[in-house]
Figure 1 (cartoon, rainbow, N blue to C red):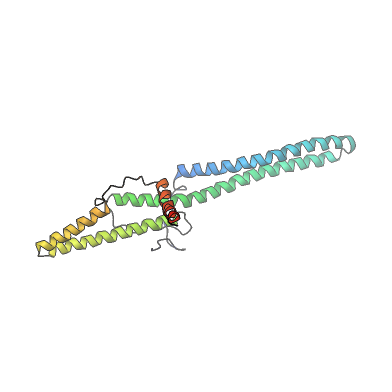
Figure 2: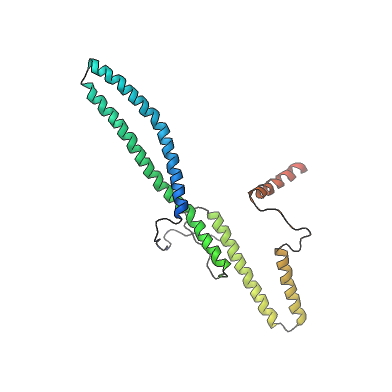
Length: 222
């Protein structure tokens, strides 16, 4: 199968918008940042609680025995709160940037694939195969789609050559034979020649069943 991925240094048009799919990417980023903040809050609250409790205990002891230590204790609790707040802000910024970059890699191939299919549905089969960056997601999906696309274009070109040969043929019998062969091929592709129509729903459950069926047959045979 031919690889249609972009190599490093390939030419890209610069995007004019910050987001590729704003609604999805914002939802993805908010979910990621929200999960990170929840984890940060859950882990920080016990630290802040016990630090505050210890601060109150040591403050009472320092007030009774060594008042000079109160300023040091106040500075330490202030630093702890500052570090927790700074960590929360940095964590939010990091996961916001991380979520943006990852969502770009997810959305870009799907968006390109969607536009490519729309053009094909309008009869524009002169398009080139899809090219995406090597670090984008769904590489296998795009490669398989490109294989289907180029194979289908090749088949269309072969059928066009057959039609041209039919027009050039002088024999009526040869014309009918060529036409019948093309019709038979199309009927076979569409499943019209099957004794029973395949009414299975093509979804994830059916694919898993197909994958486990050979192993079951092999197990019974043994």
